[in-house]
Amino acid sequence: MDAEHQALAEAYKQAFDAAEFLRYNYTYPRADFSDEDSLCVWMLKNLHRAFTEGDIKGGVLLDIGSGPAIYQVMAACEIFDKVIMSDFLEVNCNELKNWFQKNGKSSLDWSPFFQYACKLEGRQPSAWKDKAAQLRKVVKDIVHIDVHLPQPVRADVVPPEGADCILSCYCLDCVCLNMSTYSRDLGHVVSLLKPGGHFLIIGTVGMTFWIGGPKAKLPAYPITEAEICELLRENGLSLIRLEMYPLTKKSEVTDDARAIFFAKAKKN
Image 1 (cartoon, rainbow, N blue to C red):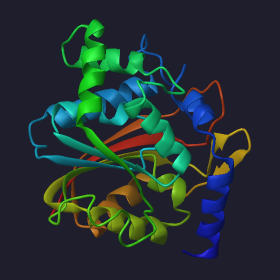
Image 2 (cartoon, helix red, strand yellow):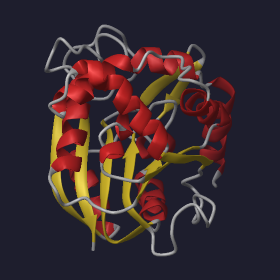
Image 3 (cartoon, rainbow, N blue to C red):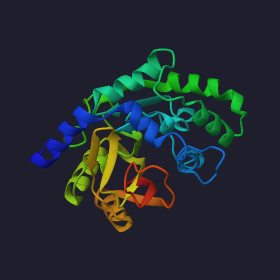
Image 4 (tube, one colour):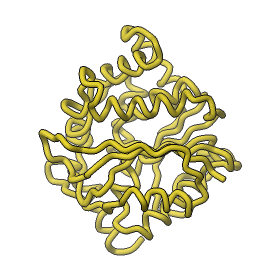
């Protein structure tokens, strides 16, 4: 790891605040479930669509850079028997373990997310506790990851042939400071995916900084839409769909992203 990225990793370790990060990004107005145009609604809709189109199948899903969040695997838990979550920071892994292993304790109330996920599946919002139980059932491990390494996770985390699906939300754009590192680290991640497996990614467009806590203003690489397509192609992925969510209204400055993207791709 070069000195610039090493410094970022150290700042991330020292200043990231999981509870504040969740409050910044997964409460009102970004998580407004009365507004079908809110960001978190848009993300859940895209993830639900991706996992219910019928082409994503298999036994193992690896979530890359989960952070302290669980919304991203709510749709996947109905498809996969084994979900593995991962993060670089121990504080995020502990936040996840608190929810999965200690009777649902979390710094954020995830029930509105579960209720909306149930709505997308045609179920009553009151079924959210059953869905939460299903998610706890299929998440088998929470592991350390470092996408800067050629082997980002332990060799035994995924099968020798690779995971059937890899999901990554707001990871590479927050830890890569230039195009070459973004491409290299994406390659590290894709190496964990089996040929023919699916890759789903949510990230930012045009973001130069993001807030990870009261004392954590962290730099980022302001990737463009064209670069996203180029990076996927360079790393052996065929793009199936790319969706964009323009960020035009914000009541709190937690980053300077111009848009959020969702991409669904397949490994060649």
